[in-house]
Image (cartoon, rainbow, N blue to C red; front, top):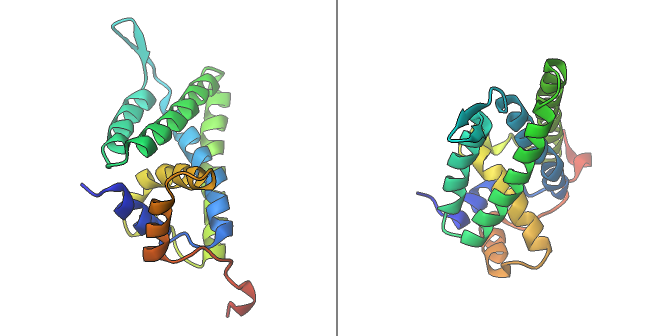
Length: 175
């Protein structure tokens, strides 16, 4: 079981250009939302509660986030993901065409934004080397937002010590 510091440091190593980090604030939630919409159907009843594949996946991911060693971050990323799942289920309640458009639209647009961000970075996405990067993306975005609000400066300092500071890559030097 890899801990928060290790996971965020490894992910941060692929995300040092500030434009790429900003792209993740848009792209990652869109991807999570899109996947949530696509998995919100079919819903089935279980003990008087409507469940969907999206809520089942949410439960597994929430358990993973809450067991990485930083309960505050785990709770925050779980809360943010829960909000996205609520919106996803609302979008999935429409017509079949609307469900598909919201789901695939969010997913594809999110990845397009991610790939633009990684062009600025000059590196491939983190999940290309470690599939766990797909789980760490929402944790990274949540942690970055919390760092901006002054949360856990020692963790931020440790990530920057290991992965280096953020920067703007000089695009004029691209060959």
